[in-house]
Amino acid sequence: MNVLAAAVLCLALLTDAVLAGAAPKPVDDAVPPVMPTRADVAYGTHPKQVLHFWQAKTEGPAPLIFFIHGGGWVAGHRLSTLGTFLEEVLAEGISVVSIEYRFVTEALMAGVNPPVQWPMEDAARALQFVRSQAAEWNIDKTRIAACGSSAGACTSLWLAFQDDLADAASSDPVARESTRLFCVAAHLAQTTLDPQQMQEWTPNSRYGGHAFGFMPDPADLTTRDTRFAQFLAARESLMPWIQRYSPYALVSADDPPVYLYYRTPPAMGQPDKDPTHSANFGVKLQERCRAESVECEMFYPGAENAVHRTIQSYLISRLKAP
Image (cartoon, rainbow, N blue to C red):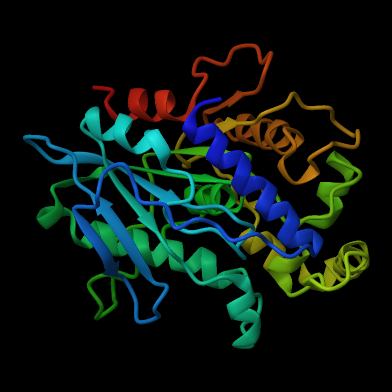
C-alpha cells in the first residue's frame, strides 16, 4: 500500500468513527513533502476558508488539481491525504490547491440548513477564488480537475454535476468566475445523499443524515441507527435539499468526465463491510452517467475496462492530454 492509499484508509476509518459516534483520534498536522508556494491563502472571511497552493514549474499556464479532503464533513484537514501524490503530480507540471472548509458541525451551531451547504459551497467559492488568481499563479483556467476522498469526493462530484455557479452580474469579481471543471477523480465517493437510494443499493448503509442535521450523539453509539431512521422518515420533506446536493441527482449531458476509485468490488443490494465507501455507489453513478452520455471510468479490484489503476495516473493523463 503506497503512502496515498494508507493515508486515505486512515482518514476513512476516522470518518466512520466520527459518524458512528466514536470519539475521533487526533489527525496529525503533517508537514507536506513539498512546502506550499503560497500558504494559508484566504478565499473567504471565516478562519477555515483558507487554502494552500503548490505551483508547478512550467513555462506556460499549468493545469491544476483542486483537492478537497475527506472526513465526513466533520474531520480531516487539507494535508490529510496528499502524501507522495503531491510530489508526483508537481513533477508532471501540474499545480495543486488543497482547501480547508467549514464543517457541518459548525453549520449546525450557526443554525444553517441544510448544514452540508457550508462545506459544499465553500468548495465552490474556493474554486472561483483560485480561478480569479489564474494569471498571477500561472494556472490554465480551462484545465482544472477536482479530486477528493470520501466526503471530499462527494463534494468534487457535486461541483462536476452542478450547473455553473458563476454570477455574471455580481459586483464581486470572484463570484463572476466559473465553477465548471475539466474532469474529476473521486476516491471512495458517496454518490447520493438520498437515504432510500443508499439502503436500496447497500442495505446496511447509515450515511448522510448528518449532512441534513441528523447528527449522531458522540456519547451514545446506538444513536447512529436512530438518527438514520429519522433521516429516512423525513426524506420526502428533505427531497429539495437532497436533490440539490446529491451528485447522482444532478448529472446531465454537459458534465465533465469522472473517474471513480473503490477498494473493493461492488455487490449490489448486499450489506457491505464498509457501507460508507461501498463500490455500489460507483456502480449506480456510472449507470446514471452512461444514460446521460457522460464519460465515467470506474476502478475496483477485478474491474473490467478500467484503464487507470490509480487516481494520479488518471489525472495526469487527462490534464496533460493534447
